[in-house]
Length: 455
Image (cartoon, rainbow, N blue to C red; front, side, top):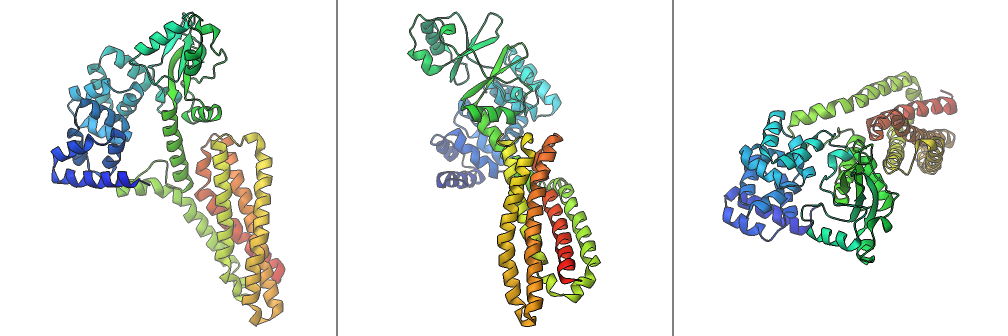
């Protein structure tokens, strides 16, 4: 949710853009950071975004703004510029941000822009573009501050003071003559050490690093687990390629969480609010197929027990609550397991432990709510006779307990199985869990009813 300050900025900017008040826009931008102005771009058309971008006070502000915009919006703006102007902005951006934007462009435009850019920046960008955007190599910044292991502390501090182009320096990485990573020195340790001590005398030699092919989610887990502000990226020979900083990790966590939420809702894997209606329909249609198919199977199951329903019509009243309780507890269990897998708190080796725990939770919750709803059913049907009311209430209560136990089991099992098959566990937590728990709940309800009521 936007803060009142950002809500006011967004509405003011939108109004001024539509009035064509360029001078007023420029004046506002001098009072707000590019990070704040980027919010306003989410609610504008492409033409309005171009108009707002052109109203920026200077080139530096425009460059910073491009870095803060959503990648697809920044790519749209770059496509709308003359190639020379676009190349100029990309040259002055951090290589990882520029690579993300270029990766969104058509292939011919990528080639054209890379040819226009300076050789140094072009080499970095081409290297970054070789990696998948969701890997450590795709999000790393190659402008890393590294020094030779034999350098003295006072020389390292002087080098640090002169380092203008390096990424934000949290640590000094120490390399040997072959540019291989051999150690790391936290900034605090550097400035508190004696001036004439060599870096290899104060460095930590056991450096936790990642390779460029490592998935960005695994990188985020490492940074979160160890509390790093940055993590180095090295190749197989330990040559230092770049670093992934904590701000990139925050973006990764946000992206992965958004992707998981959308998958769990069965809405695809990317936010679709800026896409056309038909694109959204095409993305979401397959995810709902399982619901439609299983719903049809459910209808067949219910029709099979039509005679039972006709004998005890009260059973029909409780179908929604039996299915709803099983589905809801299943969604809760699936969310917990998916998040545990994503954060590294649950491993595949804990399969049976997790399954037993979630089934136990489901059984206890099912016993509590089965007693509550079953008791309500007994009171509601007491006018038909206490014997009949007790049988129907007992059927409902037992079915809820069984449905919630099975729902918790299935919901915990699906993500673990998907993880074993190297499929995103979040994909198991939406339609798959809901439809399976509905089908199991229906079968359980009528089988319990057939046994307890003698139908």
